[in-house]
Amino acid sequence: MAFFEVDQLSLSFGGVRAVRDVSFEVAQGEVFAIIGPNGAGKTSVFNLITRVFDASAGSVRLLGREITGVARHDVVRHGIARTFQNIELFEGATVLDNLMLGRHCAPHGSLLAQLFDLPVVRRAETATREVVEDVIALLDLAPHRMSLVAGLPYGIRKIVELGRALVAGPKLLLLDEPASGLNPEETHELAHWIRDISDALGITVVMVEHDMSLVSAVADRVLVMEQGQVLTSGTPAEVQSDPRVIAAYLGA
Ligand SMILES: Nc1ncnc2c1ncn2[C@@H]1O[C@H](COP(=O)(O)OP(=O)(O)OP(=O)(O)O)[C@@H](O)[C@H]1O
Image (cartoon, rainbow, N blue to C red; front, side, top):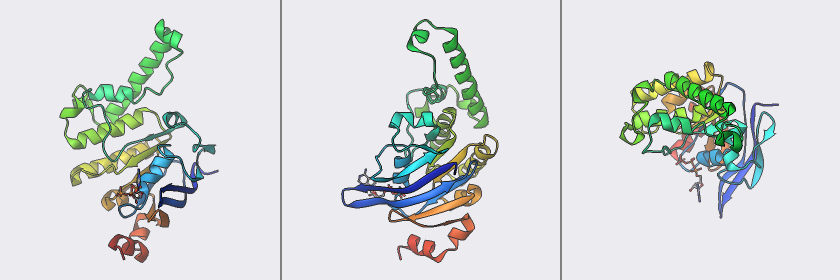
């Protein structure tokens, strides 16, 4: 059984077949990148995995468990967290509060236990705080802990979003264009964090990315999509030298 399997996944918007029979497998601990020209269907694949859209056909399995029937708000409980192409944070809240909210899916005891402030709830809150503090330390966010997200530079906000996905304690982390809007130095730093997330925390990463410097630096394997379909897959070096991939990017 593969750690994560996408099997014959398809999605249509009216007449547009955004995703067509897409299949791939990701091993535990791998950093796996999905690349392809604009409109290739990469974000649609993420939206199918995270149940934003219903697949017209196919299946998605994490550790053998079917995800395609899970409610959207329950996907994170099944071990899958994601970041978005356009940052989705609470702008008027602090970094700390945004990170605490990322943990809201963790069980905090029954409603009665919460109403009476029982020890089980307090223990859960302490555990949440510990996880959040670990993520703040891992991503060097301590200087920004009490800052409002709205006032932070774009590059820091992207890292906060990464942190918010991490505090959910995912087995599988989906990153949608994590390097977009970052300068080369920030992208270089991001590469270190992605490797740490994979190597030190053992979290499997699947990312959609256009920046080939990041893909080459962190990805173990790359899936190339074109017009909703899988064009090829391989190591970053293999796919970059593949004439079919070069032609797809040149629009040939
Ligand atoms: N909500 C939607 N409604 C209708 N069509 C959509 C929708 N989302 C995506 N599409 C179409 O599906 C196809 C795949 O889009 P998708 O955003 O998945 O591609 P992508 O590879 O992520 O592109 P990019 O790199 O530009 O983000 C495109 O033709 C797009 O116009």
